[in-house]
Length: 538
Picture (cartoon, one colour):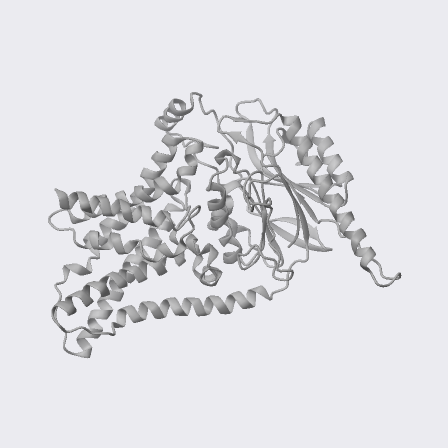
């Protein structure tokens, strides 16, 4: 009984340890060691139903991880956070079943080896089982990213977000492929440790273990290649664009936004005007510093002015001819913004296709709008909707669950966009493709990749993480999203209502490779929960 209790305790502890790899703790090195606790439990399972027992132990590890890792979701719904944690823990469970039942190297009794050939076979078996386990883990992360619309949040590879050298390998294997490294090394290390212990007991310790040396070599090669790519990508030419992003840090809860709509609109307009004033102020200061009276100082207006997701509490209506028209208040906002200068205005707001927004059968989209100021408007309609937030699958029990949790019926929900054509904007006199994304779509690699075309492109994301208040949810969102820049080798411009607003380089960094300045919006204490604007280059 005590042994079983200790196994359960260690299993949960392994998941808790893994949680420290992610925000807000950011002890990323832990990702290399948490499986040293879990794998011995799985490989020492005995008796019948080994796979089932392995599933149970690993599921407990998953709960230890996800309950902590998703605690920010409790600011919206604790029942939902716990239910999602239980579901995501099942993927840990499947890994545990595979490790305990199908790929269990400890089933083979330790044998004393006397020849180099026998040692080589021993190492190959170790490397083979480790590769199978690591590949299976990556496969589970891939399935998790698309099954039931997908929630690929915080795979093991995301822990390398602050290790830009290793992160560069995501260009070739994706962030999911990065998860192979810690699982592979852990599986080899645990097998090597057991073998070393058995050799010690037999008084025949071998210093060199070829499997462990091979695993370390793989990590070293990943570091070397990452260093080469980081250096070359940093020196690539940039688009030479300028953006102005506005963030209000609007407080809100799951059932309401705490500010009046008029205050929200006035605040965005005020901050935008302040940002444009800074442009003129910079130009005036540059003119004073010129050494020659004949030297002309150009006033470089931003190419893009960006407001975050759902920033206007109103709709744009799509007409029969394809044009998009808003009500008088909406159009007055567009007119005012364009009176400040010549640029493209980008924002997130609702878009309606149908007769009226109150028609229960009308299609309503969560859209990214690009207004060029000359009557031309482009829109991207969000494709990857949030389950239980923007839509509910046609399953009666899910509708009942939502009603019991929130006290209101869900209704039709939002409609899903179907186009994967990039938008286009003029930056510095050249056409640049825009890879659009709304909300957490920037964490979905298979979606953003569909917009990739030849020629210069930039990822533009508008999001609102205000529902999660001042939690680590915003930072976790950003850490997942920055890998899109590395995978696609496209810069990202990201505007949040509350969260991380900034510009990400092709290498996944917020640091401008030329000026060496951080391109993110923070207050004096370094917090992202800040009201203001950010002028930055792309």
